Image (cartoon, rainbow, N blue to C red; front, side, top):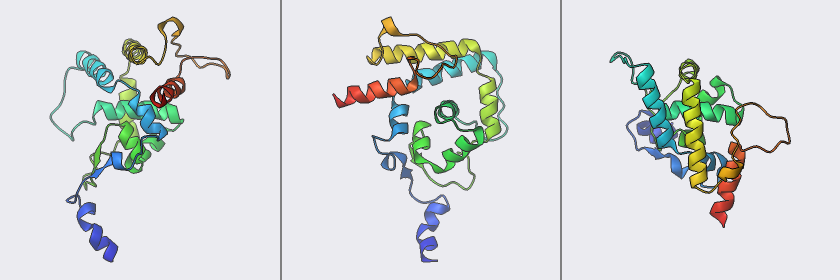
Length: 184
């Protein structure tokens, strides 16, 4: 009972906010992975594409989930080999996933507005068209070249699965080079 009384303000959503960065150390793989993306440019491209193709918005219902959260969950889902349900559950409980989604402060909120349903993630994925994906890949490749993580002479972007052992530019390769560059 004493512990519940001690935590009652935090559990009721009126206590202090927890800083996600305090719980996710810099060498954590998901944090390093998330820090390699040009999030502002990617989110801006998605917002622009969605605004052109889906111009109407409704003031009714709950506030929309930020695009950064949905896009990060979609990328993490593939990176970690998780299902929609698994990655949405990890968003609720895993500070590293919250960090990757751009959520820097966390406070338990009875409305659970930060929760993402798997159906929401599926709807977001259905709105990603080929043109938008090409633009996002170009943005990520440009950012990686700008950081010196890849050379333009050796950059081949292939969205198809490859056989094991073949050498292609992947998120893991980019992460490894980023870690190597930071340590030197």
